[in-house]
Length: 188
Length: 163
Image 1 (spheres, rainbow over the protein chains, first blue to last red):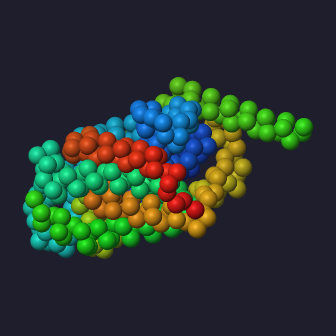
Image 2: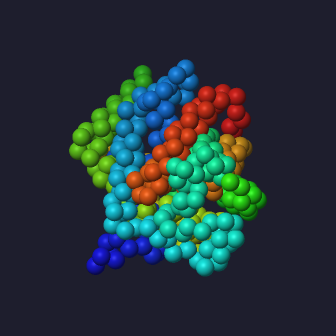
């Protein structure tokens, strides 16, 4: 029972459940599932400045999505309290590769050696968190969507622009993983 | 004249549906759906930097299984929904607009830049936010950085190639 409520979900349970949010949001209020538009709404709400891209009624267009986003944060917290992502059972091959790159702490959702307050001022911590975060925001705004809006909503609706974006996501991710991380993770 | 009238009627429908969607009861539903999404997403472990590394190194089927079955489920239910002609609970007809392609410049360039960030943070936008409360509080810095990234995009937008 506890495992059913809190354990790691098999991919064939998690995937279909996540996919159901596309029809669910359409049925409730004809809303398109996509998380990254919230970054634009937040810019519009916090600091629109003189940028035309941020001058629109974010409450009208995006309040529902900002609440969905707040929910995501709460849901993540609840799952974590229930024991999720305390220990992620990755494949032995990945574990060995990462150990070779200098990762020794395999507890939590992300390695504390990179994603912690004291690691933030190291080169690898700064690039992973600050530069990485910036690129997630810039890239998803430029591409017009992220893994939710393009990879799930877009592909499910057979949108060629989304397929191109997803090819880009993987091209960028593979290049970083294979050519940049080996140098970055070795650097303090 | 008829044209204007139709347009006004459509606008009125959109207006009404926005008013409907921003009613407290609907906003509560979006919040609850978000909680459910964040809960499942975290338990799927797709929020984990370790899982993203495993995926980009092709060392497990798990992430491909999650994304693939999510897309398949969404595609089938979306097709059924379109065919059903059902109206949303807020009262409007359900429709999903097509995305503009052009030459796809914004999609490929923006996609690659996003991919750099995805592999560096080990998180896409939803996990970025959920991780703050699930064991990686430093991710609040990544969230602020992502907002800054979106802002800089908006600022540079007139100068960037898109379509």
